[in-house]
Image (cartoon, rainbow, N blue to C red; front, top):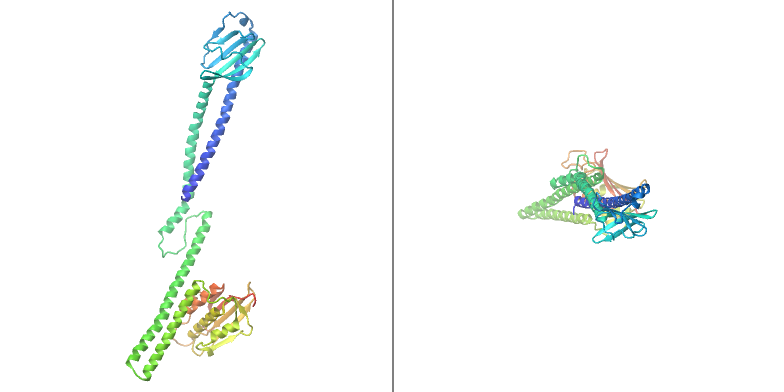
Length: 435
């Protein structure tokens, strides 16, 4: 059941139940008032007859031995005057004498055949004055009251349900517009959702959708960069291997051995790219490479520098204070090694690369800050320097792995230009509580 149908059903049933309850209460109250009014009419009729008798008592004394019959103007009403000895002095015509035989004083109800009568008896000196109404007339009046009440109530109820349906349709129109907007979109359209004058209640949903679209857009861009980087990383060693093998087939001796060695270097590079891809896939799936929760910076730096090509160009500062980082040592070493390789690759062969470590206590928890700084290219070179900040994923798989490690362990990776024309890469990770 849709939200519109659910609202219409719940509110409509509540509306109908409320109106029926009000109509029932009004009918019961009106029926009681009508019954009381008719009883008062009976009592008033008996009192009026008693007043007439009190003014002209001689008319009763002069009555003939047989009861005087009076024809009433309305059918279903009756009146009788009886002496205390039981003699009927006066009564209306067509009245069954058994109906008013020794009636009770006040109000009472009697059943005569198929008809019920409502009686009121009043004692006036030595006479009993009884007035009566047939209950059938009262029932007809009650049915008339019901008819008078049902028609307006039914019209008002139908009108109210129509207004309720219109209000629900109008109130849910922004949801329909949002549904139409989302269904009309192409899968590649990740632009923010915009509605004309959205209601306050719908604003958080639209904001959440737009945040989701923004995250998906960033993820898609990251995947596209990753695909481009992976293709580039694979294409370069594969091309080199193919070229060197082709040369090795055509030459002999030292030149052949040199070509095979270069092909082996390409295979090693290709293997490293494959390892990087596997590590990135495991990181994105949230699978840690090891279970340790912290690592020492001195040990991690030593592991990152071990076997690094261009190790002699790296200057390490601040590694004396052994800080504990809330990240596995293997992953931290991989991140630092990738940053150093990137800095060595995108700077002049003779320029130094700085690796500094410092602990900052300005945040909670404290952060361990790793800075990798290169001096870029000051002379003409074929390679382009890395992009500025906010484009950390655009140069090779190494930086993509660093960014993934940082995000997985609640850290950050930022990049900025320095005054030498190179890049400053800052990897910040939380310090271990024991460090």
